[in-house]
Image (tube, rainbow, N blue to C red; front, side):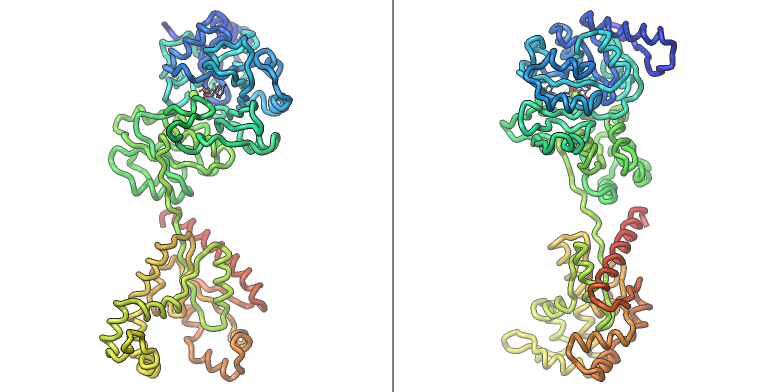
Amino acid sequence: METKVLDLRDTKRPQNEIERQITAAAEVIRGGGLVAIPTETVYGLGANALDSQAVERIFEAKGRPQDNPLILHVAGPAWLARYCVDVPPLAYVLARRFWPGPLTMILKRRDIVPDVTTAGLATVGVRCPEHPVTLAILREAGVPIAAPSANRSGRPSCTTAADVLEDMDGRIEAVVDGGPCEVGVESTIVDLTVMPPRLLRPGGLPVEELEAVVGPVERDPALIRPLGEGEQPRAPGMKYRHYAPRAQVTVVTGGPEASAREIRRRLKPGVGVICFDEYAGLFSGYPVEKLGPSGDKQAQARRVFDALRAFDAREQVTEIYAQCPDNKGLGLAINNRLKKAAAFRVVEAEERSVVLGITGGTGAGKTSALAAIEALGGRVLDCDRVYYEMLRTDEKVRSEIARTFGAACFLPDGQLDRKHLGNIVFHDPQRLDQLNHIIYDAMAPELRRRMEAEPCTLYAVDAINLIEGGLGEMCDRTVAVCSPAEQRVRRIMARDGIDEAYARSRLAAQKPESFYREKCDCVLENNETSPEAFTQKAWRFFKKLIEDIKEESQHGR
Ligand code: TXA
Ligand code: MG
C-alpha cells in the first residue's frame, strides 16, 4: 500500500485545495481506511471508531495488544451524549473549559461504540483535539475517530508527519501533515466514572489546572512507579513498555546541576545524553539530544519524544542518560514519559552540598549567624564539641597525645587528665600549637565522616581556629563574623555576666579582628543592635552566598 501524504501545514494555501485534502482524508476515514492525523499533543492513527473492521486495522498497523482501548476523538461537547451515557455535569464543565485541548475523559460508553474500540470495557475515553485540520476532518467525516498515538507499539510517540512515516509508511492510507505538534506529550486522562476523579495518565493539561476546577484528583500509582505483580493499572496502556528507544534509558533525577554532574560521571563510549540546553556543553564529544532550556517545560514536552526517537538513528549509542524536570505542571507528564521509556530505571543524583566555614572572635555574633544557617536548613558542626569528643574517644589522637606529652596525660581508667595536659599547654604557646596540630589534623576527616553519616545540603563548620586548624580547605567559603570592639565588649558582659575590665581582657587575649578579615574569603559585619536583627541579616547574606556558590559550580569553575 502506498501511504499518501496530505500536506496541510500551510493554512494560507488556496481554500479549495485545503478543502479537497480535508475531504479526501474524511473520505478515507468513512471508507474504513487509516489516516494519521495531527493533534496538538501527538499524531494519532485514526479510523472510524464505530467501524469494528477499521479499528481492528489500527491494532494491526501499530502491533498493539488487543486489550488496550482507544480514545474517541470528537468535534466538541455536543458529541458526548452520542457515545456516552450517564454523562456527569462535571464532564460538560471540563469540556467547556478545556476543549478543544489535551484532556481525555473516561465516561460510560453507549453500545454504539464497538467492543474492539474500548477493548471490551464498559467505559470509553473521549477527547476533542485542538488542531484546525483534524477538527475539520472530524466535522466532515461526521463520525468519531478512534486514534491511538501513531507510533508503532512500544516506540516513542510521533510529533511530526516524518515520525509517522518512519513507523507507518506502507501500512496506512494517508498521513495528514499538519506541522509539528504544539504540546508534544499526549493528553491528560482523567476517569470521571469515579469520585473523586482519578488521573490515569498525566499529559498536556497539567493536573494542577484540572484540580483548580474539580478539586483534588487522585493519582493512579502506576504513574510514578512500576507496578507490582498482580497489580493492574486503570488505563490498560500504562502497563506496557512504552516510548522506548532501542538503547537502554536511565533517568537521572535531582536538580539540573546535580543530575548533569552525575551523568558526567557515567560517561563512557556508547553513552548518549538527553539534557537541558544549558548543559549540552558538558557532554561534548558524546551524542547529545537537547531537551530544551531547564526552565521551559513547554519546550521540553515538545522535544521529549523526538529526543528519544533520535537515538535510534545513532547506531553507536547503546545507553542513554536523561536529565528530567521536576513533577510540577507539565513536568509530571515529561517525567512519566521519560521514566516509562526507561522502564523506571531511575538514579537519584545527589544534590551538591555547600560547606561554609564560620569563624570570628568572641562576642562578634557567631551564634546568631549559625542560627541563620540552621534556619536555611543547614547543619552546624561545632568544632569545639568535636574537639573534646575526639580527646575522649579518638584512639589515634589519644596515642599521639601520649607520645607527645607523656603517658601521664591519661588517668589509670583511660580518661584524659585535662588538668595535667592543660598545665603543659596553657603556659607554652608552642606546646599548645602541638596539641592543636594533633587534633586539627584528625578533625577534617572526622568532620567529613560526620557529614557522610548524616547527609545534608548545607553545613557550617563552626570553629574559632578555622584558619589555623586548616579547616578552610574543606569549605566552599570561609566567613568571618566581625563586629566593632565596643559592641563586642557590651555583648560578652551581658552574655557572660562579667565586668568591663574582664571583658576587655578577654578580647585582648584573642586574635585581632584584622586576622579574620584578612584570612577569610568573606566578612559578615554585625552592626545590629539585636541578635534577631543580625540573624535576619545573616540569613540574607548566607542565602545569597549559597546561590553564588551553586551558580559558580554550575559554570564549572
Ligand atoms: O493525546 C492523546 O491522547 C493521543 C492523541 C492522538 O489524541 N492519543 C493517545 O492514544 O495517546 P493512545 O492510545 O496512545 O493512549 C491512550 C491511553 C492508553 O493508555 C489506554 O489504555 C487508555 O488511554 N485508555 C483508553 N480508553 C480507556 C478507558 N476506557 N479506560 C481507561 N483507559 C483508557
Ligand atoms: Mg500511545
